[in-house]
Figure 1 (cartoon, rainbow, N blue to C red):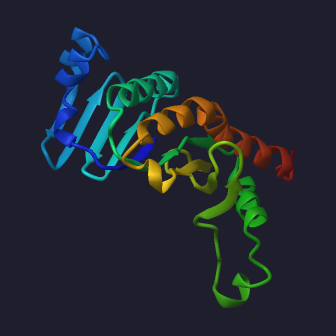
Figure 2: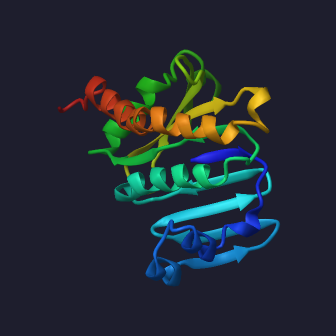
Length: 213
């Protein structure tokens, strides 16, 4: 999750989370502090990583079992900091998937990004490095969805899928009510956003089958 606005990085010390009742004593003791300052804060606590600079705050985890805790932490932070100026936010789930064979991996890339029409005449051995699809998102929190598919850095062969649910808050809410809108966005769009990366991967594997499958 990424939030764009105006922040005071120095407050996000594990002791602040402890005093606010967001984490327990042992969580505070186990927290890893990379840096806490007025310019940047980078801490790990409860399986989450918080990185904050003056205009950007991100809170994420590489452990899917911590997704619910991540959402809860964000909701509680919004509740505790209702006057924080916020201009935009994004829910950004991502996942790596192993592919059965190199041939199947190539087939996925060639299907998503065909090479014959243009690229094969321009370069030798063209390959898909990254593909991003953008679409508008309607409803109570209009914005856009950006879906990225690229080779996995975790599995070989494999694919990596990221979906970005971007929401630009109304300009008049930046200094009044932005945190409240963010809170509503998190509650309404969290589950659909987290499901999108899995839906994309499922669609790819359902529609593109290995030649020997």
